[in-house]
Image (cartoon, rainbow, N blue to C red; front, side, top):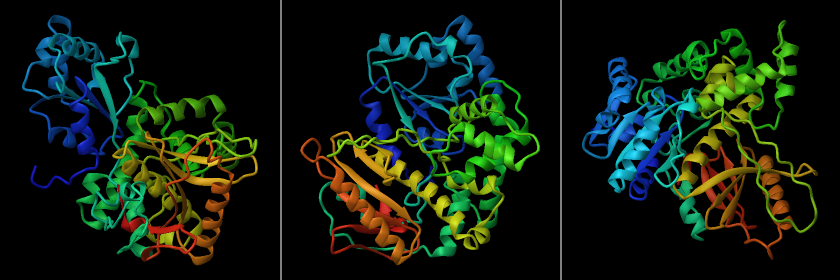
Length: 424
């Protein structure tokens, strides 16, 4: 495709195909899974097409291998609509004994998991795809590389082209590929369209349970207000009850939250558990985040101007944007993103931890000299608590900002990096 925007996951997908018989690409609808898979697939079948899904269901009864015939890698799009395909692919990988045979894409966890008889261990690998980061959408200059930082190159230099008004627009637009390639006003409407489909259809189709759209809206609004927090489901239920005539009970909230996770709309950030010098209890509750910042803004029914007029709300929406980008960037480095908080309420917004043991500590601040200074002190305080006899020292300490223009290294070694300069 001539207008295809390269994704960081491209190389990861290519690598996975060289190490496993089949690769599952999972992630939220509309994030570009199919388009990315088609860059490497040599043949395909889409179960999103009702006619092809009907044919696939028939062949699953008669001869499952008919579905799997085709030049490899063969793409099976939205495989979860016919869950029995999983075992058919697994068996075919065993019979062929070759790598890189199939790519499966899915925007939801299958409803009928009882139809899957085998986990696929040894045959499948999994790639989780997100909406576009600012670097992938062309909005970040990419002058500061996380890989380079982990390699020890800390003398950074970069300049962001994103001002406060543009940052507000980018948060509301989100990283949806179609929106990225649309005119600005249309791009904002794309996020609204996603929300409408989520509320009225997608959250019901994931497990065939009819859910009240108004209840879904209330829950999404509450989640949007609690971005970046370790709020419990019970607290969310109480929050909804304080603002609505008919509150959702804890069990209903739990059901709705599980559905949102199954369609990759809500994505918890797990807690990081480092070795510490003293016996300080680490809080293990996950942090709540939408998979894309536009889901939060549209749930609150706000736009770029509203964010610019409400710095507090803008702050936690910006944090959601940063988490999306950090997840995308770390994935290409074989890393994961965590948060840290202990019983003294010492926090670190993001910890990128690589499989080789290297890690970096990141505080997220939308901007302001005093905020950056406080964040830097917080990072150094956490660093001083780490037991470096049992674990390595952090590769870097970073304050990730929204409206700062320049990337630079402070005299104390802390990096100040605008999100508009960052890449993997």
